[in-house]
Amino acid sequence: MRRTSFVVTLLVTVLISILAVPASAAKAGPLVRSAAASPTLSVSSNLANRRYAAAGDRAYDLGSEDGRYPAMGFHTRGEMGGIWTPAIKLLDGIWFGINGKWIGPATSFTSGFGYAQMALPAIYGLQITRTDFAPDGRRAVEFGLTLTASNNATFKLNVDAHSELMGAYPWGFTKPDQTQFNLPDTAAFNGKQLVFREVGTPPVANATPHDWAAIVGATGLTPASGTTGSAFRGPQDPPVICPATGADLFRCDDTGFGKGAGGELTYTLKLPANTSLTVWFTVAGSDQGLSAAQAEYQAASANPAGELHAKVDARVALDNQTRVSLPADPMLAAEVT
Image (cartoon, rainbow, N blue to C red; front, side, top):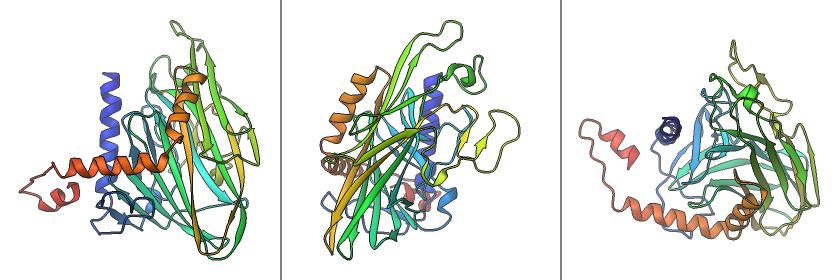
């Protein structure tokens, strides 16, 4: 029952994300043009209040279409968004900046076959597109930033991540609840990656020890620096905290259930005029310890662009075998197909 409820919630979220955008055609972004043609849906209004999911079969990313990560969900109040590899959550969110200034919010959102893409406002002469997807078979989510320089540019790329290693169960209203079961996370910088861990035994009856880990890093790049602490939520710092119980707020960044940690990676990059660069960031994790999380990270980060193209091709092939007939609602059928 618990797993069924969790999966049903995710499927409903994905369907809502698909149906929330109008059926206007849009060109696929630069990262997927070499893959098989993928139909897309785009929207540029009310992005902060629209939700999206970039889902694979082992992990998913759930946020708002402006590129932020508001607290959302009710099983554990406000903690059901972010980045997950069931049966655990990895991060509350991930945020990107240039020269210490946070990028966004997004100006438009596009949903394609197997990926989500956001057009971000230009900053320091850089045009930026963000692409999120979860490669199938991997306990990881990939984030691709495509940066295009109009002039020669040397800049610092900042990446904030805030962990929330937490089980999908217990929930916020069970006995025990997550205020008792959730343990504090730790954060470390190992010279290349941010490493978050939750290790221990919850102080409740019949609890067993666990070793959960999440890793954040970039493919092919070594950061100039890495810092950890209790903050690091990008533009959502300082966070608005919703209480674990009682009256809710309209919009929060975290809740009273949260016991995560934060970190920031900074990279120094150079781009010649009129050239583009795609930087891939991987968030990977495991509920089987740090070594397993590192193995997931290495597998997912080896070739993110190739994984994306393979996923789009697989979705297009599946679409070619699929027909939806809803005679009473042809507009809905057009949205789904």
